[in-house]
Structures are given as structure tokens and as C-alpha cells.
Length: 434
Ligand SMILES: Cc1cc2nc3c(=O)[nH]c(=O)nc-3n(C[C@H](O)[C@H](O)[C@H](O)COP(=O)(O)OP(=O)(O)OC[C@H]3O[C@@H](n4cnc5c(N)ncnc54)[C@H](O)[C@@H]3O)c2cc1C
Image (cartoon, rainbow, N blue to C red; front, side, top):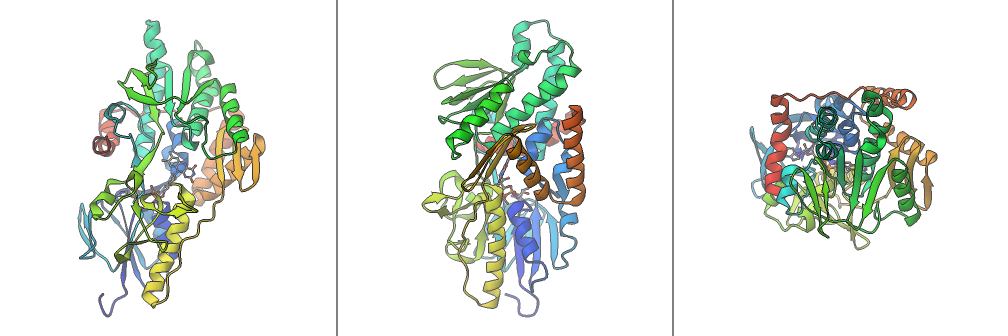
């Protein structure tokens, strides 16, 4: 470590974990450098709202520099981290190198296709802003194409949407897509009946929203059913050729759209660390969040593997936020020569919305469904969005949609350059993942 200047803390990732770590280190006697490949922070829990034209992309993202500019000891470098040299304490970047004294890795996760190349190639993931915009373009385009075909089979394929994964992302995406059709698109396309559109939500487990109280699981399934979503549990997808989905039992579902919300795995960068990996590519860390054998390096959020009462911590935002804060505090304890603290997870509960006035919420032993859960969901998401302007505009957008059943963001931004750019990082990622 250099004698005179403050130690350098490098943070990889300006997602939930990385930003919380940087904010915790604000004003501390360290120089912080945050590195992210994107110059914006994405509020991933609302990506499906961009994909279903409920919100424009700018409302769920915020420039990293705007978030960090108040913190004078924190700087930002836009770069892709391609490697980590734990021995030499250096990050290899697309733009050069970054030395560090302490490291907090918060690089998150990527879509997990569980080794099924056909899904990686043809389905739509929902992990980043590029995915969400691409999906929005595609969904809206299916309706334009359906309007112009006289072939009934083609029309059915165009208007069939299969969402795979019955966790909160899949449930929310299915509900939002159904509302887009029921409240907005039926007005845009006068020939279209709600029942012309087939939305399937497939889940391999026996119930939606695994881990929630069975009554809430059933309530969510009932709410989706009322919105004409075909919920199929115990349905495993084994392949997709872009026109038909194949299930494990041999059944095929014709559909031009498959949205893959069935799982994520730690980003590939974790494999480059050269340390053991657990299931889903996550890296096992000590309770203090340190990488075993490298006390100066911490991993937080989706990329870290740590158990709580014998079960892996979930890959959710509260874990990343709480770990980001603890890792930053533990860095400062190391700097001060104090003992480190272990991670203790405080679970704030689970919320999932199906649409207007419809949601389920499990907060400890309290369980809500319907309107109350929906209001809770609205409140929690508005509070968590970064930036006052974003909160206000999102609130206005939602109110507008609620009262006038309109979605202004239903633009097909579909020129070739955009598609190439939107798809490029993901296709490389997809090819590797498959
Ligand atoms: C569609 C969707 C819906 C979700 N809904 C919910 C929800 O309702 N509630 C909930 O609690 N959680 C939800 N999650 C999960 C939650 O978003 C994640 O658990 C959380 O974002 C993890 O935080 P993180 O800091 O580990 O990673 P992230 O927030 O993903 O941040 C990782 C950052 O690292 C950057 N990065 C990655 N690799 C590199 C690299 N090589 N070089 C430079 N930068 C890099 C990325 O650009 C990104 O900014 C959802 C996730 C998705 C995808």
C-alpha cells in the first residue's frame, strides 16, 4: 500500500451492491473508484415495465456520474472489467488497468439458459436495458405483423407469448403484458379481442412464486387467470426454435415470442478470479464477504455465494444493498485495524404485482393480496427508485396509465443500428452461457 495517499478502493459494478458500497465510503479516508461498463444504474425490478411499454427506459435508469457527483472521494470509470489479478491487486479493463488496495466486486449476474443453446439463441432475456428495449420493439411489432397477415396459423404464432419462469419477474411480466393487451392494444387494434392473444406463463415447479405462502401463490395464479394468462405449472421447457416452444412432455406451443425469466447465474467475470465457484457460478465468500485467501477482496450481491440458516441467500436487491454496505464498512475496519463484522441478512419480504389493484406481498408473518398489496408494491418501488425526478415521473406515468389506460412508451425503435447495439453484448454473453 502506498505510504502517503489514501488507500484505493476499487468497486466493480454500479448496480445495487456497488453503489451502496460507494455511498457508504463517501467521506471516508479512502479514494474510491467505481467501474461499470454502462454509464447508468438500472433499476432492474422495473425492466419488465420498459419491455411492456409502461415506462420509458430513462425512468428506471440514472447516470452513474449524477448519482456519485456529490461524493468528493468517489470517481467513476466507464470500462468493462475483463480480468482480476488478485495477486498483483490489479483490475484488467477494456481501457487499461486499475490498481487497488481493496476491492469490492459487485458485478451481478447474467441470464442463465441452463446449457440450452436454442433458448439462448431465440428467446428474449430480461437482464439489462438493451434486453428490455429489444423486447418492447419485438412485442409491439408482433401486433403490427399480425394485422397484416391473412394466414391464421401465422397470426396465432405472432400473438402467442410464452413467459418462462414463475418467480416475481415472470409473474410481473405476464401481468403487465396482459394489461398492455387488455387496456391499451385492444383500443389500438379495433379487430383485436383480448382472447386472440395467448399469454402463457410456464413454471417447472408445482406452484408460482416459490417460497411464498401457498395461499398467496394461489391468489397470484387466480389474478393472472382473470387477466387471461394461461398459467402452467410443472411445465419444463426443453427447446425453442423461434416459432415453437418444446416442453419436456413433448408438447409444443406455437409462439413467435419466448421471454426467458427462469434464472440467472453470476457474471462470467467470476470465473476469471481463479477461485472455486458454487452453483450458478457464484463465488463462496467468508461471512465477512471476503474472498478466501484474499482478505482485501470482497464480493457482494448476486455474484457472491453465502448461506443463511443452511440455504443460499437469494439473488435479490436487498441482499446486494445490505452486503454492499457491510463490505464497505469492513474495508474501513481493515483500514483502521479493527475486527470485521459478519453478514446478517434482514429479509424485508417479497412483493409481486400482477397489475392494477392486484399484487401479493409477504412481509415476515404479514401477508397481503389485492389492492393493499398493490399499494404497498407501488410505495416500495417509488421509494427505492434513485433520483427525485425519476420518482416523480414514474408516479405520473403510473397515474396516467391507471386513470386513462394509456401507455405512451409503446414506440418501436427498430432501426438496424439500434438492434445491433442492443443485441451485441447479450449475444456474446448468450453464446458463452449456452
Ligand atoms: C428483470 C429483473 C427483475 C428483478 N426484480 C427484483 C425484485 O422485484 N426485487 C428484488 O429484490 N430483486 C429483483 N431482481 C434482482 C436484483 O435486480 C438483483 O439481485 C440485483 O440487481 C443484484 O445487485 P448486484 O449489485 O449484485 O448486481 P447488479 O445490480 O446487476 O449490478 C451489476 C453491475 O455490474 C456491472 N458489470 C457487470 N459485469 C461487468 C464488467 N465485466 N465490467 C464492468 N461492469 C460490469 C453491470 O453493468 C451492472 O451495472 C430482479 C432482477 C431482474 C433482472
